[in-house]
Amino acid sequence: MIKKINLYKGESIITFDEGRHIFRDPEGKVIPSVTKATGIIDKSGPLMGWTAKTIVKWIRKNTNKCDKNVIDNNEYYLVTEDDLERAKKEYRRLKTEAADIGTEIHEWASDWIKGKKPDMPSNEKVVGGITAFLKFQKEHKVKWLESERIIYSRKYNFAGILDAVGIINKELVLIDFKSSNGIYDDMRFQVSGYQIAYEEETGKKFDRRMILRFGKEDGMFEITELDEEKKDKKIFLACLQIVNRIKELK
Image (cartoon, rainbow, N blue to C red; front, side):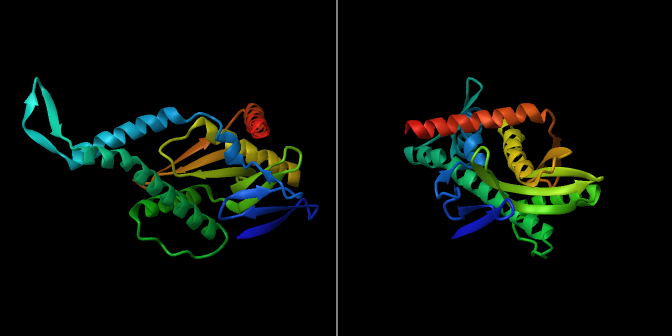
């Protein structure tokens, strides 16, 4: 489904292809998203480590130890070629599952902010993330102003979907929801991209920026306050320049 989005008080109209997650500028040209820009940052280190651990965990869980399993103080497993192929694909299954969990949490929180009354899902991990969100709301008493707002920078020609804007203790706060296993550098640069476009269009300035990470396993949440916004904005724009230049070369 392709949506037309009126921005800058109707002066700029961009389109968003929901299925393909593609934005087009008022001239109909494809423009980079915030996540496309920050995607240029290498995040392979943590992912490679997680993938290796996933393979080893699958082998230990799904294969049998040798009868004489202790040789020179080491344990040995009987692993077939089929086992290796299945273990190799396990990380993809888990990655997809984790993405679905994050999407469900975000959708539930977004509906709740908009005043809807979404049903509590059956997936315990999703419930854990939702519980974390509700704890955050109870403790901080956020007055929500925006949810899932599409943003666009005319000056730098990029777009994206901002998670939420709210008021906490009379301060305007930009909030980004995450359901990852940690907070990574590229996330703060994403927030800066949303900030640049939102402030450009509305003329409002944020007092605070934060990342709210949901606990998928235990229902706890982690709040990360972001400082040094000028430095983060420069890095985001540098990422955007790299992505645009690579596109030109192609």
